[in-house]
Amino acid sequence: MTNTAGKRLIKFNDTTARDGEQAPGISFSVEDKVALAHKLSRMGFDGMEVSFPASSPQAFEACKRVAMEVGHSMEGREHIGRPMVISALCRTLDSDIELAYEALKYAKHFRFDLFIATSDLHLEHKLGISREECLNRLRMGIRKARSYTPIVGFGAEDSSRTDLDFLVEVYSMAIEEGCHVLFFADTVGACTPEQIYDIMKHLIDNTPYDPETIWGIHAHNDLGLAVANTLAAIRAGATYVDGTMVGIGERTGNAPTEEVAMCLTMHGDHYNVYHQLDISMITEVCELVIESSGFQMAWNKPLIGRNAFRHTSGVHQRGLLKNRATYEFVHPEDIGRTSDFLILSKHSGRRALQMRLEQLGFRDLSEEQLQVLFQAFKTVADTKIEVSDQDLKQLMCDRPKPAESLVAST
Image (cartoon, rainbow, N blue to C red; front, side, top):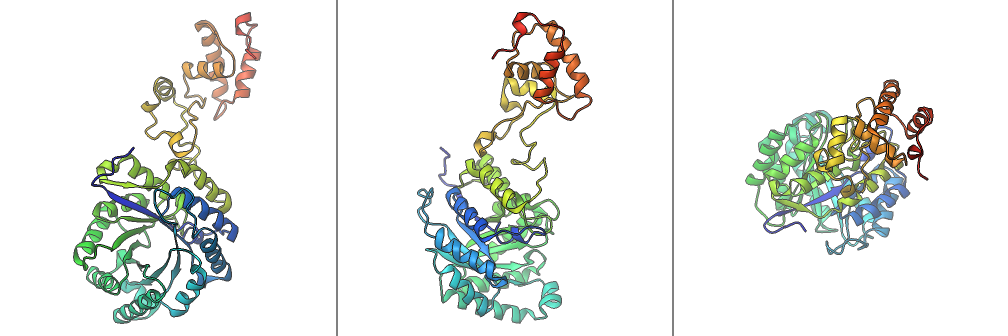
């Protein structure tokens, strides 16, 4: 059991069904979102941002269904002690908040996730308002949201490109108005980990202290740094991770929650943190997202890609046959996968071939016989990406007539 004494608890909020769905070519049905919500709840997520209810009737319906069907579930959450928080994205408009309430009110715990752009670029060219008007809209939005629930979240859109002094002013006012879940949003993935750390630490150190304040990080992956930036924010004091399963999301996506969770699992002592996610469900939940979204995942995707635990190098395979820890830092079984390292290709060695043949039932090969088969195997392997079990069986059929001991056992 992990020693949690003196460590900070990192909680996870999932936005796969909302921000993830904003990826071009992806659209979840209401049933998809409900199914995902059940699994996220059992997996131990603190919260799920289901949708932006004002964007469409289907988004409203999905939020309402999840609130009703998952918003009271305690299955697999005994160690957490309460149901998952169900949230919806809202602008600071009364109409957005009122509509979201009609969907969220069925959940035991619900949250409005308010947002408004704060960078001068967005204020001038997108919203056409001043900084003062931005603050006023946010103030009114928080007050409206708090008239329904004390649990209100706020994320400054384009936080990472906002003037730092103004960003401090924005978040300070949000805290003073009673908003305690604060998301720092690297909306276009513009920052490096060093920049994220500096900004996040500055915000925490220069805004009013409230023991109930929760600082979160919402990172995008435009420069391939979403996971690194999320970890940098945690190092600076953030305790709430807003990510998506498989990292889906606009453009190049969001921080992949499964990667962040495993980084914290493997390096919890380094960051002095722990989390409550059931990592054995990672593969199951990711596969659900992939299936329902139609997302085309890269073979080399960390943890869940096809090649994440496959090896063709003879040197690697020989090491794995002796001790899997030689080339498996993460155990695939821990995240609900099986080890599949014995992939035969032109890079494979004799011991890997021998092991696979024995698994197929061909045993008691002499060294001389194995060497002859290995040369034949190499000839086939030079013409194929992978040598299949059927290829191996054909090699055994084509070899010179074997002695009785070479006949495959049944």
